[in-house]
Length: 64
Image (cartoon, rainbow, N blue to C red):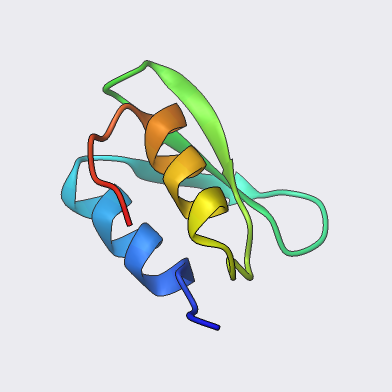
């Protein structure tokens, strides 16, 4: 299976999203200026569906 975590974090950073804080477990909280809301990013993203949902929640039109 592909690991999407590094790709997702890189795309979030390129689009102006900022790391806010660590959440529970291996989750991190990021802020998206596009949607003006916080999003949760899992530390181990193994599903492209999860990666695409994070992109959707952040307002970025990128799809895996």
